[in-house]
Length: 394
Image 1: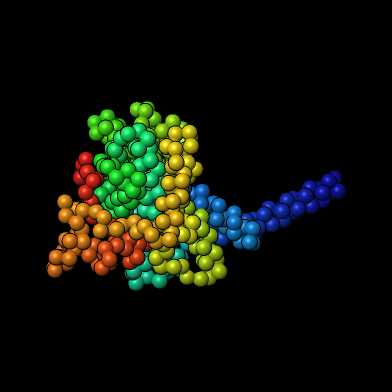
Image 2 (image 1 turned 120 degrees about the vertical axis):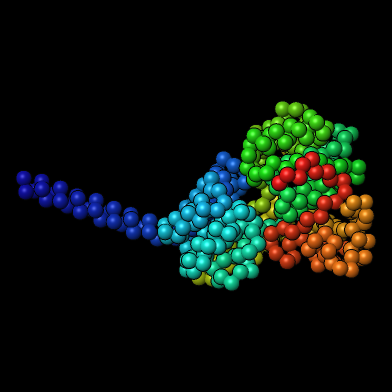
């Protein structure tokens, strides 16, 4: 009996030590947090989440142990504040907030927790405030949108059409910058192209996005539509009506193989690799990180060759090379008008500096609007001719 008892006790001790060893091993992982506006089923958040996981895997091969904690479906304001606080309490050494409206609440928590680094992605205050533990990060996504626009313009040419549609979230500069770049890309290969934009007043509302897409298709005659919104419903609605689509954040051919030509996306992987390693090594993050096409941090998904217009791949490659070598300046104000007037002519006579609000300092003497030079978050807000807003409620 004593021998049996001794065996049981020994086994219990082995199990105890094993459990403690496992707990000790698990504790080696450094925790990072992400506050998400949606969840892994949303194209926008999926893009962030996959990049974060991929970065962790890359760094694991270099000897870094990383554990991600995600907070999903987080609204602006108090829910964002609570999510950030919970991630701090969970032991995260850095917290990334992935949506525009989250920054005010994030900054409140950052002020109370100076030992933790906080990043507002797509935001513009953390880089310039007086806190040492806040920063911003975004990418020159308008470069990828321009290339996606080339694909859309090529499809218009094949169809013998000129009408584009665009589902936008809000009338923010980020959306305006994106849809303008997309339109300019399309116009570069289809000079007669025009575009209608409908806003839905939400970053992620699948039903409203579908309704906006349907309205653009059925009531405005748009033959190719794109989007700056988080769901795949504009793509599925395009397929339902037999028109074509250019997506955002993910390859949408799985949901709409007969409609979705290509998508523009930010590849956050390199940023997360940089940010995680910097924090783990005790460094300080770039206060306003912004990379783009040249660094491989914005990209296009695979071209859907089954429905893309002939020559699309070649046209995209040509446009990409032109952007990279500088022979094409994306926001060239010499080539656009606002209210029927050439932008540079209005700019030249604008002696009091009120033309287009705060955009004057961003336009060079040569007429190039310098997007992303002064902050990572987009600030292009000109409403150029050729683009019509269906609504302005948001």
